[in-house]
Length: 377
Image (cartoon, rainbow, N blue to C red; front, side):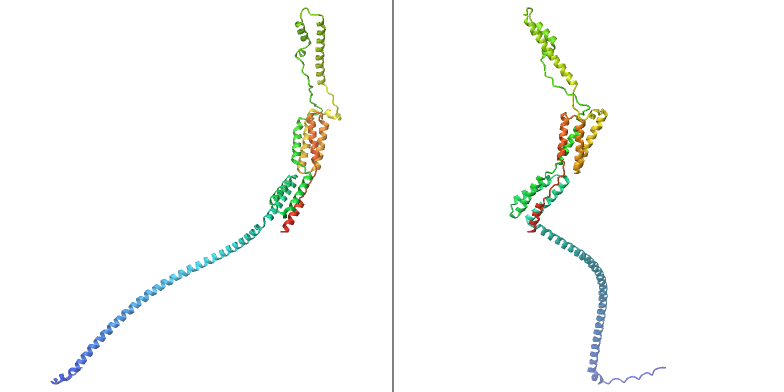
């Protein structure tokens, strides 16, 4: 269907443009203004769009940064937790160390307090400890020398101090030293040395059955007498002149008689050395066979060794019994006239007299005086 063609407009009149001129200008100006505003709106919209894109990009970047920071924060939080655990463990260890230090400090304070005692109290404690140790040594060794030495040293120390409050302790020390000296404790070392000497001499002691030969002392004779009367007579005859008077024969006979007397004396001395008469109280001592002499000596040694062991173990009754048996054996089987046998008998008697039970007195007066001074501090 075709549209109807519009009818041509009538030609404008000559006075129309003049009437519509100002209105057209205003319309043109409005159109220009509208175009400018539209352009400005388009520019503003483009700028806004660009800003939105920039904000979106910045938001994406910030979101990425926030993610990275969150991951870092988680890592830091984990590290902080680990450090917190380590700190807690170190804190517990430090608390233990502090407790130990506190305990050590307490012990140190106690030690300082114990060391802060006066010099006199420390000296008294040292003296008491030394006396007790010396008393134990005296009880073990059976000798009073350790106790006497400790008491003497204590007295010397107190004498150097010269304290009036310690004079009572010094008096007690003097009393105890006098008591220990008066006790007369057995000197075991000297007794053991004597027994060892007797044991060593046993093999050299002569028995009655095998007595040693006694060699008599022979006086020296002149050379002429020793040569014999015949030599003397020959010498006298050679020296006499041929015309000798009759008195020379008397001198010759006297000289021969003198030589004969000397010769007879020497013969008698030799005969006496072969025979010796000895009184024997017990005849069975002469009946000891040579092979039994060895066992007799060994039995005597065993007796002496048993006495030595008994002395070392403080069994003085047993030692006295063994010493009596040893003394009886020496007197019965050995030659008491011999010097060595007499010396051995004397040593055994000395040991028997000195081997007796004597206890070392305790220094109770000194210990009581020290306790009294320490209590009255």
